[in-house]
Each structure stands twice: as C-alpha cells, then as structure tokens.
Length: 112
Image (tube, rainbow, N blue to C red; front, side):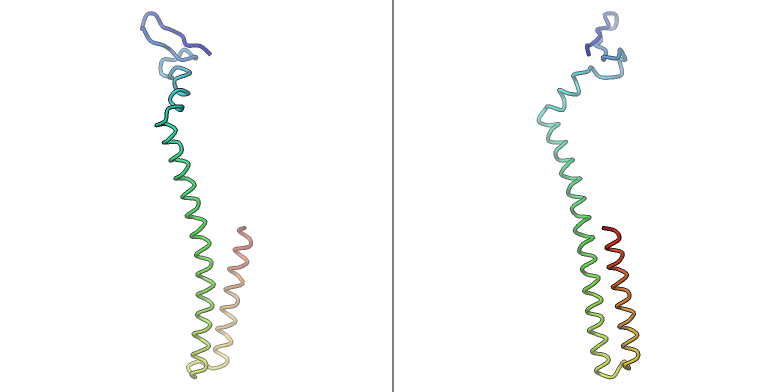
C-alpha cells in the first residue's frame, strides 16, 4: 500500500485515493501511541468489569432467593408451632415453596 500525493491540492491521499480516508499508516501509528493503548486497555477493562458485575449479581440473586425460601419456611414452621397455621395450611405452603424452589433450580440449570 502506498500513499498517493496529489500535487495540485498538496494533500496526501489514502491508499484508495479518497481524500476523506486517512493515510494508510496513520491509524497504525496512532494505535501504537501510549495514550491510544491506555484508552484501548481501559475500554477492555470496562467491558470485563461489566461482565463480572453481571455474573456476580446473577449468582447473588439466585443465592438470596433460595435463602429467602428457606427463611420463609422456617417462619411458617414457627407459625404452625404457635398455632397460627393448621397442619394442612403448613403442608400446602411447604409444597408451594418446594415447587417454587424446584422451578428456579430447573431454570438455572437450563440457562447454564
């Protein structure tokens, strides 16, 4: 690839001859500057950070959700022992919570 020098206009044209496109080696020279490399690495770091945050949030949400189901079951068990809930009501709640936990685990397994 070579630069085309336009003698009439006094401009260096790109390899294609189009004055709107920068000269061939100009972009490579720019990318090799320390400032450009810093910007590129910061961009890569930002992208990796966003991906990491997404993964951590997704993992944390699934963990908190299962803890919530467990703590809810404990609270309902205490309510049954105090007589607020009957054995039948507690069994229904326990079955519903178990179904919810199983559905969430299945969705998690399907997404992985």
